[in-house]
Image 1 (cartoon, one colour):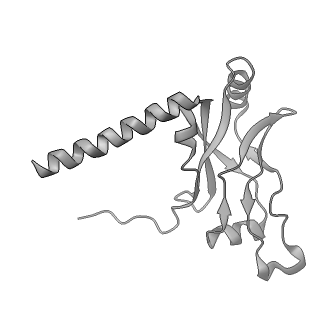
Image 2 (tube, rainbow, N blue to C red; image 1 turned 135 degrees about the horizontal axis):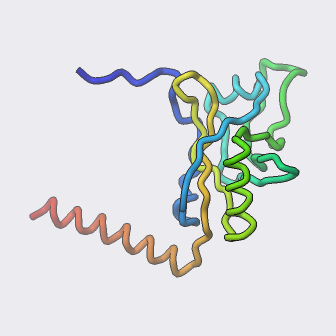
Length: 156
């Protein structure tokens, strides 16, 4: 019998370009501090994390430039659409992230924002290193060859 997927667990926003622009070394699940109107807006699926990034500032982790649409029913109690949002992570993980950013020249890229099985909003951060243009072309060539190979196997 097939397992039922949890109705609370669903993807809100995905940064599909991240794997094309960066080598993802590691990933980490973090919580995010949101207001009520932001959660209501996320339930309707109105958000974008494509241009956003995470940064360690003053011993805290922040999500910068993420977009969560205004929730019209909130009226005057709404939220700012592109405000900085605090990310929740343990001190040990924060120290590891800070070291990766500072010493190794890595960057923190949001990959996926989703509701977990308990209905909480989580963000998957990728610890990434940027790709050069020739690396991007190489990735694209591999992907095209994979598609062509599948077509040839399907025909034969």
